[in-house]
Image (tube, rainbow, N blue to C red; front, side, top):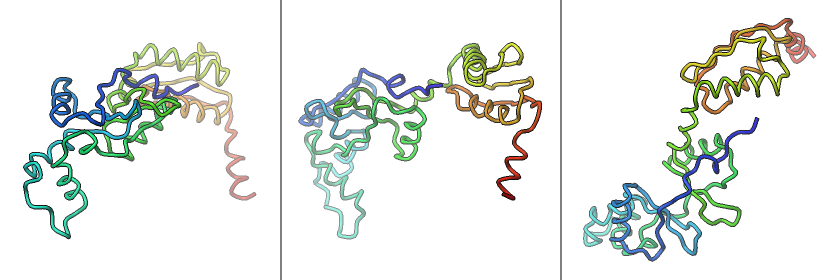
Length: 228
């Protein structure tokens, strides 16, 4: 079963700014499009991002007229003070931009978002040019899959195609993304694999695994690992 990729979830129409875009134009872009950040391009390639936080130092330090931060001031404060005197996107942008390839798996993209602590990732093609943007909200769309669609996938893909089990021999129900599976499989290892595969499906919230096994083929393996 193939996991959804970034390309299948991302927003392709992206509002962008050129590196020479003026400060006022940047503010207008965010306001007109009701967005909080915009990627900055140089020849079609993302080189940075300008967010509301990158523009606010202009007010915080009154355009750079406030006294410069002291010697022992933190790096972040010094950076904001430098941004306060910026007049173009190149001056105020945060760089480098956090980007991911379009063929990256959705789960890997979610980990990237969490690790970076950002709201969005900019997506690039094989040449490094901007191809789209992936937000937290885009990833959460996976959980609005219809219950009937999930049930069909579980029956046909997990049991029918992967485990070679007749789906009609099992009871599969999905309610608000929560899956309940009942019935009997031949081996305990299949029961465990089935739960793992179902949990990994995009859109599954939880799994109530009520499957039984005809015989436990995992006990001997575990004993061998311990005593062998």
